[in-house]
Length: 264
Image (cartoon, rainbow, N blue to C red):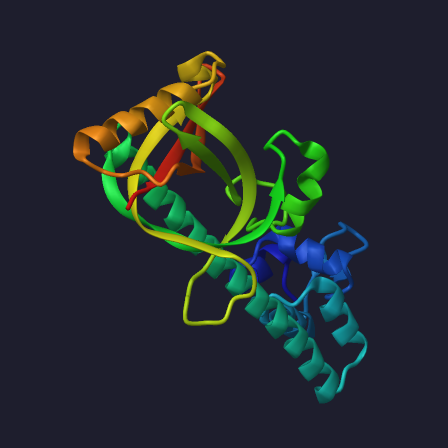
């Protein structure tokens, strides 16, 4: 017979783990009525290694409890297939998460490289999934939630694009569209797809930390028209604005937006 300390050392598990297994009925050591110490025999140790085997496969404790009551090979296979499906789903989620992390890292690089400067860049195609009146039109967020690119299906604003139409005198109108990136134009996509091969591109900062809550629309519009005139570009009269990143300074938001202004 062996003590809990000896078994923990033999098998590389903690005393708390052994007590947890006992609490869940997965191992049933004897107790010395004189001193209350647990005593483990060879069968107990074998049971613990079997539990360790299934826990290594991340099989839930309740499933192992069912196994203790008796399962044939077909039933065990069913348990393993259920776990396999869960693992595949988790891998797919992690792959998407990794992709999003890399996209946000790229967005940080855009901020460092293009904040306050202009370049020429193509706007990648996206599909319009819906529209809302404004990003504060919270009663319309159901449409945004149903078309979000959030992995957790919660509302985030990176699926929104603000589209501004303007002329030489200033802004004519604006709208907020819900979009989905189009990865492959060769595949058939239903709905309206927007793409512009040549745009003036820049990154600007908005938010209370830099603007004290004021609107920067007029300043941004004037800056775009001035840059286009100085560089000899002919604007098409619209601008697409996309939220890249929000951070905070002194509890005030710093909002970084990327601007695409299509040109001929």
